[in-house]
Image 1 (cartoon, rainbow, N blue to C red):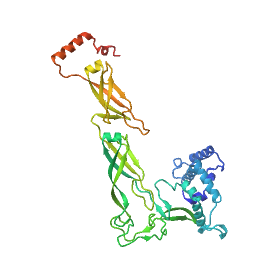
Image 2: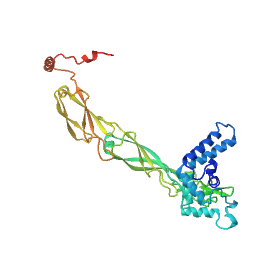
Image 3: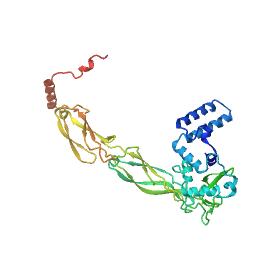
Length: 388
């Protein structure tokens, strides 16, 4: 939506509601117009399509509380709905400030510029903005990947990364011009990088100069390395801190470590994709570490105290109660992954009962005596009950 539309269109009149209309009234009025003029209901009817688009535009502003407030303030500031400046930008009567003066002063005060910027979405993230007479451009974001060990992910680590990003071309020192030449000031925008688009004598918002693409400079004899852009691929080493507790496949954002900006613009961000190599014995489940600990048949049957390792290298003692079944999991508090709030997850230890593959005669006789003493209870008896 251009400034001309903003100055000349009365959205309240388009929807047929008063300036103090409630949101429900605005919604009802728009729906009525939309039903009566929808292109699907009137194929090929240019007038109906135009009416539908105007109503949609009006509704998009008036149905949004913030945009409606800015719209009302801007129209009040500019003299109300339907007010038109004569051609050439001079105020009525041939006296007083011109349109350009009015707009320039309002922008200097932060008033009109703020209104237009918010309503029309001029200050979008990552976009160019005017400052210091030149268009500032945010640097591009950069992607990178690292592979770290399981323990490094647990404790946190610092890795060295070779980053390839855009920076000022070394051959032309960022000017974009061939050695021995210099860029010239753009005559279209007088070096500002911005031009004012006008239509029918009514000014509209500033936009990036089409000739210099916002640089404010024009290169007649471009640099052969960067083709006149002033930017080239640059390789640099960077120390990147990987926080403790990072997971495999996690993407870490490091603000301001991407490509440098232009004309004082902020740098882009660095996004690091982390790959974590698996551990020989430990696994991970959310913030908990997992471990499978083998125990003998007698330890599971009679009970025992066993030692298990932790990822930090220390050992902890785990008490196995008598009659522990295979696959039971025990929890060791605080020996898991460190969380952002400073607390830690747990170590989950699952016991795996080991059955001896070979028995000597003495051990075989002992087990035979055990079976006789324990009785002949069939542990699979419950499998043959009712299957319905």
